[in-house]
Image (cartoon, rainbow, N blue to C red; front, side, top):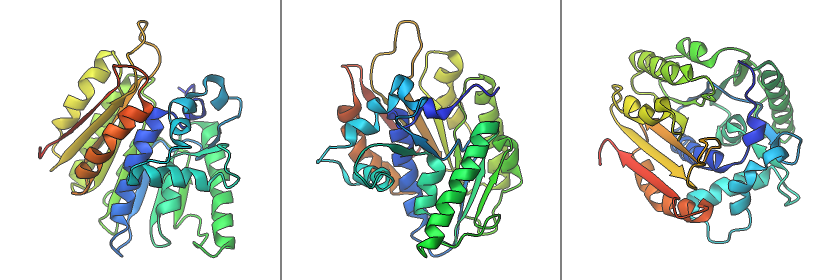
Length: 295
C-alpha cells in the first residue's frame, strides 16, 4: 500500500501537464472575490529535491520541467508555470520542484482554503513540515496569514473518504484534485465511485482527475468511464511523449479529465498543447488528445 513515492517522478512530463492545467483552474477561480476551497486527495510531500536520492534515480524531471527551463518561446500559460517553479529556485538552478499543494498555496489568496490529504506516513509527515515552513515564510513577508487548521489543513487520511465530509464547501466554490498513484488497480474504481458521490453532494464543483496512459485494461477504459458520469461539462486532455516500451513499463503518457471546467480552459489548451507535444515529445509517436463534451 505504501510503496509509491512521488519524489521519483517529480517534475516529469505528467507533472507538467497536471500543473499547467491546475494553474489555469486556480487562476480562473481567483477572478472572483468570493473565497474557494482547494482540495487535494493525494497531496504527496508538497515539494521535492530534484537532485535528491529519489528524484535523481531515474531523473524523470529531464522529460518535463528540464526541457522547458531555458526556453524563450513559451506560450503564456506554460511560461506562467515555469515562472512559478523558478520562483522556488531563486538562484536560477533547477533544485526544487513544487507538488500540487505548493502550486496551489502559491496561487490561493488569504481568504481561500486548502485541504490536503495524504495517507503515506512519510509523505504526510513531510507535507506537514513543508507546509509549516512555507506558511512561516509567507507570514514573515506579510503575504498571507499563518492560520493552521483554518486556512490550511493537512491530514494523514484517505483522501477518497475525506472528500465526502467537505462537500459542499461553505462558499459553494471548490477545485478538487484527485491524483492517486494507480499502482493498485482498485484506484480506478475508487475514483469513479468517489466522483459519483461527489457529484451528488456538490454537482457544480470543479473536479480535476489525473490519470496515466497505459496499456492495462483499467487505464484504457478509464476516460470513457469518466465521460459517463453525470457532470454538466467535461474536458479530457492527454499528452504522450513517446511510443510505449514493449514491456509496458514506464510512463510515456498521462491525462487530465476536468469536470465542470472553466469556459476559458478549452481554448487555452488548444493554444498550448501543440507546443507541449513539440517541446516534450521524444519520437514520432508523441501526440496529444483534446476533447470536450461541448465540442
